[in-house]
Image (cartoon, rainbow, N blue to C red; front, side, top):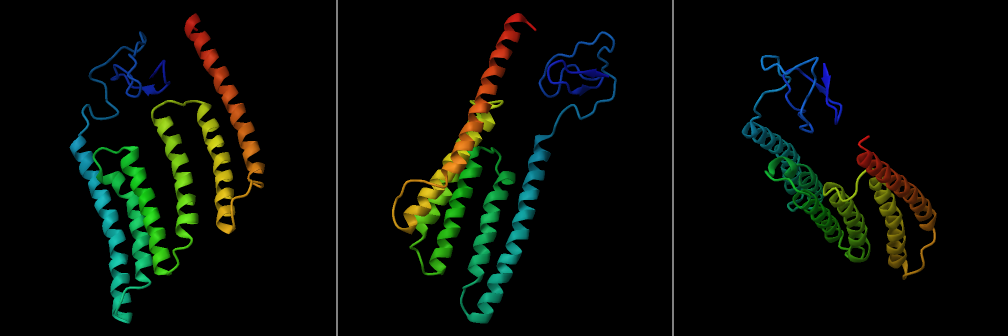
Length: 235
């Protein structure tokens, strides 16, 4: 049995190159055998994969639509208008927006999957405020508490997907974002209560997060230096 020299994945005799990192397989003790059993089909069928994903998305949509229509029918038959069923429909629509587009979209990108989910969450909170006839908390409280973590999550995922941060820089970025999030939450809550004040309790979360982030950055820097030395010395 051969193993990839780059990523360490186990390889069959029928593998001419690693299926994960595409590094050429060179093993004089186990030469390439075209007739050996293959662990997976030689050609993948993207059409079947796309059909299967659409089937899963359609199935989830039907499962979510059934209780929504049922609640609407019961609510309207009992009261002659829609009241509590709108909460249920809004919650189910929110679940749909976070789960189904992943299966239905042919090109799955961060903007197409994450941003509609955030907008759906804001719309659901607006629906709750409208149904309760109290919009006073939506703009100063609900919207900032949704947008602040959404922006931080979006930035971290974007940097990771673009490989702008890697290794120990990833937990450093997450820890730093967590500290900023706690400070932002305290400021939003203080502003909603009665005016902007200096942050207090959030510093107890911010300082450890920053310290841990600096440790991760130091490790990441050391790892980058070691990798560069090994690369230059061909180790």
